[in-house]
Image (tube, rainbow, N blue to C red; front, top):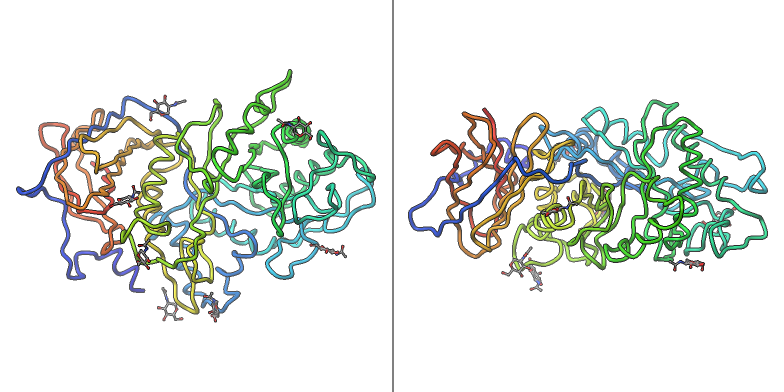
Length: 476
Ligand SMILES: *[C@@H]1O[C@H](CO)[C@@H](O)[C@H](O)[C@H]1NC(C)=O
Ligand SMILES: *[C@@H]1O[C@H](CO)[C@@H](O)[C@H](O)[C@H]1NC(C)=O
Ligand SMILES: *[C@@H]1O[C@H](CO)[C@@H](O)[C@H](O)[C@H]1NC(C)=O
Ligand SMILES: *[C@@H]1O[C@H](CO)[C@@H](O)[C@H](O)[C@H]1NC(C)=O
Ligand SMILES: *[C@@H]1O[C@H](CO)[C@@H](O)[C@H](O)[C@H]1NC(C)=O
Ligand SMILES: *[C@@H]1O[C@H](CO)[C@@H](O)[C@H](O)[C@H]1NC(C)=O
Ligand SMILES: *[C@@H]1O[C@H](CO)[C@@H](O)[C@H](O)[C@H]1NC(C)=O
């Protein structure tokens, strides 16, 4: 349990750290104004789709004590990152072979109007059990997201390799129009969860609709997505569910942007039926605002390059490093005004960077990417509002949030080669507050440092190491 020990007792490990100012350093002036409010935060999260939930529950032999440890790292806000969003995959497969996610209607009932043959195993590739455990630790949003409709509902008669949903613009299937059947099917998935005691809060019916890979996938352009959104919205309302609809998990930010005009077009714009626009960070990063009034989530992104860098916060700025992700999260909130930021996999039995936590044999390794997420997610809770922040030094980038309980969390990232002093002025902070800095760098994983006292009524002075991230969190 070395990680836990380090997390709880950073000062006992020999590298005594604090964030008091030093005389020899250049100073950055950071301004936070909690009275200038931007988007509302829904949270941070990950997925355990394609049977990665099974990894957490010991598919490869992880002992129960370590299973609990991983669950706490992901979803407990005292012990771990306190993720509040879990993205479950709605399976389209006819079995659980390989890493398939099994479907609630694995085989065709014969035609779109035939009585569907639903089956519910109360397990959902371990994602159901995971959702229960996550909720018990404080989850607030369960995002159910289909990668594809079952193959028999599609133009290519295959859940894999793209293909379109039969019935959307430009399709014509011998078996007929499956749009209503697919909407009923998605509603039934939510009902099964509900009957078994778990609330699905968000529903998406597409994943990366620009791609036709060898795994579960379904193509769609904006027009076709809009066709189905109208059907789905009507069906969800009729079923009396208050699940929030999302679209379209575009595989990059620019590709999601391309789908926006069609979602806004026509006498009954599809966007009016949506609560969240979802986009991924691959191929094009969330660095700009999408043209919409509804909330926006960055709902999947990861380092898929293969180089394994679990312990590196900064070495040379490559894809898997913690600092890279700290900054990607920050930019998504400040420049793309997202309300949520999700990595791809939370924890998996692998030696790649596609998860935040690696499980290798019995070993649990939270990567520096994980700690970068935790620097935000532990202190920026659902319902928080992003607020105005800025820095006088370009090496120091900032973001800031005020939580519903008034707690202010400001994030300072120093990607410079030198440490800096900082003077943070926080407009609107509660009188008598102090701030506690938390540090992640190559030597620290969210280490709590001694508090910084208030100066001149509203200023906190301290220092930030080179290539590091500090979260300043207010308390009485
Ligand atoms: C099950 O799905 C696979 C594709 O994932 C397909 O090749 C196979 O024919 C299906 N089996 C049945 C019995 O439908
Ligand atoms: C989407 O594809 C359909 C079918 O090919 C086509 O009719 C429609 O114009 C396309 N929409 C856009 C925005 O390209
Ligand atoms: C970055 O550093 C890692 C070691 O952490 C090394 O393996 C890798 O080759 C370096 N990459 C570049 C582009 O310098
Ligand atoms: C941090 O600085 C290095 C150069 O020292 C650069 O390669 C890297 O891209 C920067 N990282 C971020 C997140 O800006
Ligand atoms: C997004 O955030 C920027 C500041 O970072 C702000 O200027 C802009 O108005 C925000 N957009 C919306 C729609 O709130
Ligand atoms: C997954 O777990 C098994 C059993 O502990 C182990 O042998 C294997 O090396 C692990 N795989 C990876 C990629 O870590
Ligand atoms: C995982 O469990 C083993 C014993 O079952 C233990 O030795 C190890 O410290 C645990 N690892 C973590 C990270 O908790």
